[in-house]
Image (tube, rainbow, N blue to C red):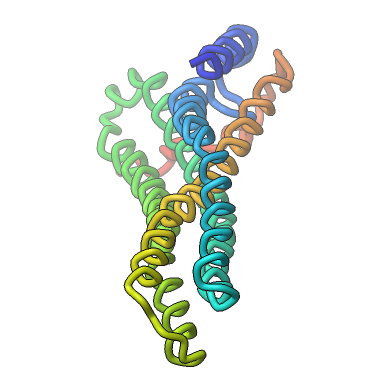
Length: 249
């Protein structure tokens, strides 16, 4: 809550001194997207210590119960976690594209609202609606890519204990021909299942913190940008601009 209030205060204070249209970021979009997402994502960072402690404790218990053969299963678990960390890099890139598309859509809508009298007078509503719809469709594609990568990371964390347990039992019983007792089986299953949440939380938090860093960088760029910009007569300042040159029949 403190972070939400602080970022909101910084953006509102800067917006009161800044021009409405700027490449550093739109205040409405920063408040509606970056601040809200950062505040929600930072809540999960409090689970990082428990996740790290759970992994350390799980590794120690597996080594004590199954010996070095459990290292193969743990290697599979950490390999999947490494894949999740790699996916988090693509997730961060997808989130950046998502935020940029959202900025473009907000600028386009704001420009359409500001020139609404001209749009209504010349009956340009269909043309404006088509441009806004196309911009929103492009944004939805980027949101879908971000969500697909996010769910892929979560599901990989969910199947990690199952695969790790399977590999460990195969190595322990089949290759090493060690006797499998009920205590060993259920004890190892319990330990691997206890590692499940930690293996999900750790890469998910890394991805969330990467997105928080991206949002904070956007807010920083907005906060340190010039308060007043020279307004050139030539076009090219706006990232999104309504195209009305083909509105006449």
